[in-house]
Length: 348
Image 1 (cartoon, rainbow, N blue to C red):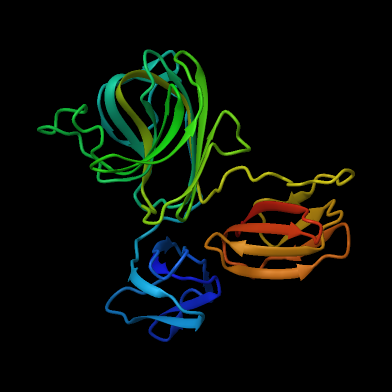
Image 2: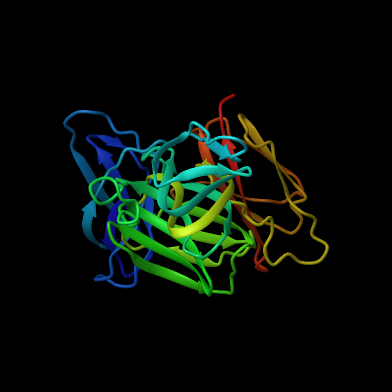
């Protein structure tokens, strides 16, 4: 994780451990000025243990460096689901407050937090159905570390904000994204009208410093926010503040950036693009390419690993030399037509 400031978007760097290039060329986005600091996350670094020398090499451009921080991560592709049919799944590993199973849903009447996963999880999609029974002040917490109960380790109400991470909640007139560092700070609010005794599907997609929040509409985010000083890893779970609330169909998928729209600005007559197989071991195929002319593939950290021009309606790419992991694929043309998709390279 690099905290830096840059006026232009032509800044490129490498990070070295001794004589080993551990990142390849990384392009740092402009931040808005040499005094405006943002954070950029680089994923998947493999560092050797022990005493090491780390260096940043500037390839092009200029920037102000504030800090460079490394955190252990668990980049395994994992999906965890709990439908709360009869009991809580064994994946939950932290709880405060009085949680129970009620008619096949997770229930709490009061204040409390419940978490699953590990603090090494970084980018993921987390979603759940939420029904507010008597008031609206509950939701999903994510990228959570260091949770605490509050009081003399016995008062979940006092410990509502006792965690480091993010919270997305629904209120009568808004969807709110907030940040908790043993305190509460609102990051962004999306206006709307919401009521009790209505089931809302909430989905949160994290990628580096960017957070997207979806409510009911799973295509257009209610909130799209990039945190200039983010928490980049942590557990996921549920949080209630002195209300009666029900949760159902809780799912988290690590290494996943949500449902990417299959086409944007699609013109009449263009068939839906097909990307398969997924996951893939040796090759991926694209069908119904239509009017697209340019293809690019990126790692989740933003590193471009492949680029070519497309001249045929179908295309097959050998990915056997790609590292295992999640990749983002983009096709475009000079008319503004755009397709974005994702695939997983995985040795079977």
